[in-house]
Image (cartoon, rainbow, N blue to C red; front, top):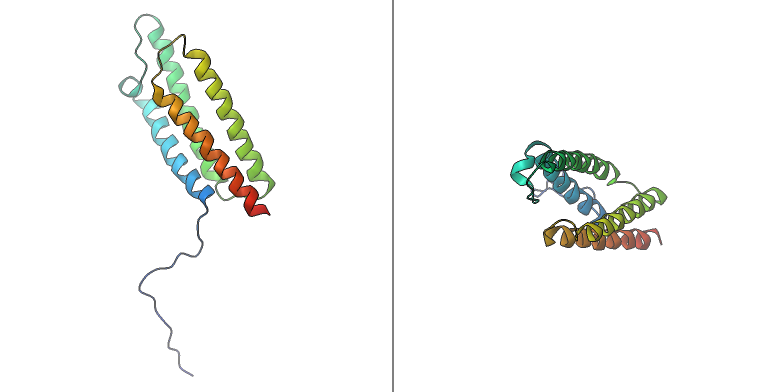
Length: 141
């Protein structure tokens, strides 16, 4: 008996990541980066331009939004490997929260000037969450 083992020079992955895991990792990085910037560098990265007394209140709300995005990134990172009914419930909650956010964006678009990037990004997120949901449904069958 010989103890010769085949040695591969190219590392092989032990597990292929699904589209769901990959998307959640991308969103985790994106939300954490935007949340960090909004929390600590609010004036420099804010897309809203306001003058007057409401500036401090608006900056505080944007900082709350930044802290929420950091929390959301931690949530997405923690659920990336879930399976079964738990991942369906999490994705459904993200889709519901996305529709609420999209509704509020349309509702507030008359009162404040929002760049179209908010709407485009929210619609892209909704579409990708639907793709993830249908991928999980297909995987379950």
